Image (cartoon, helix red, strand yellow):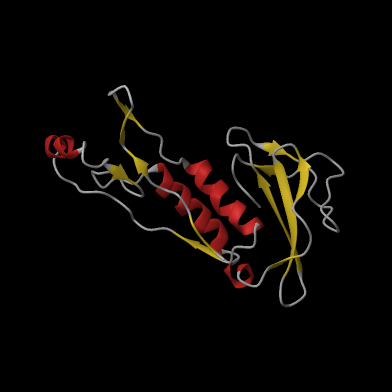
Length: 168
């Protein structure tokens, strides 16, 4: 299984009342959450496209907005990196250190709640080594795992601090 994360959204969305409003694009922590959730589900990798709509001048874009919504993804309409891009760059740097085993991991147990909004799962690699993946599902707060936190035979989890939406 591979993940194609949602990293784009409408810049402008027309509400039913006829007003224009800036829409929300995924932020860094939401991108991390998507990737780590997919890994916990058994994903072997992820990819993202550099989705971006036209770079036409704003007045031309505005005249076409009724036909379709101006959208953005990894880059703004002006070509600048978005928070989604920054989040993917961060999570790719973290996971690149584990590429030799990421594709070999097989779930070895059920998803386990370690505390509210924190889940973990054990995995086994082809070479027989055991791994644990833990995810903070809270998008706003860093969590610290309490003492006596264990995931099967993984007992060194206590005191582990995990950023919002991030995994380890």
